[in-house]
Image (cartoon, rainbow, N blue to C red; front, side, top):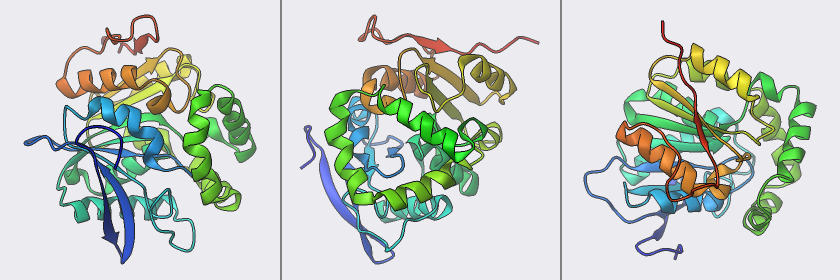
Length: 276
């Protein structure tokens, strides 16, 4: 049983293989929130933010094929195959339309699903979306990843270390090299659905604030960009209150402000668009 009142665990079948899914309390009439994890790890580290949002909508936290407690597929699936598998998970759960909340690799996967099946996606949240020019070449991305490890909360280590060991270094390096080549910026600027991008100011895998502001000014009106001061890459684990508050404001169409429940912990830095 997943920790937390009303949470359930299920195994569903995708292409004849079992997929592990965590389900929050059902919220009738809501558009479900599906949390999508990063590379080489399971959905376990997403649970702090998922729990914080569980009262707002039915919440789903799957382990994608080959990750965490889901069955291995004999080889590490690439990003297009993982996006297809995510759609298969939605089908198996009977979810016609959802919000996708992706961290790291979960950002590109959410963008892939939104571009391929926009009628299935009410909107996407990209929390530290990896991939693109800032992470290239691979050697640069590996150094960024090493710097980020030192900036994450130490209590995340026992949560993700078993996942990394199970996934394996060879699979991890192969998938990470594919991830850094993913054109996240280009897909973001052409996203067909409402999109919220949330970046941390201490995340070495993300561009510096000046570049983020430049990108935000290029984005279409249905894209919102916000920065959380003090957050590193795995903000879903380290800053769940602030991230959940930002997502809640965005879902409500309200002004995005600092989380009143986390005063002094992290500041939200919304990107202002220039008036024309």
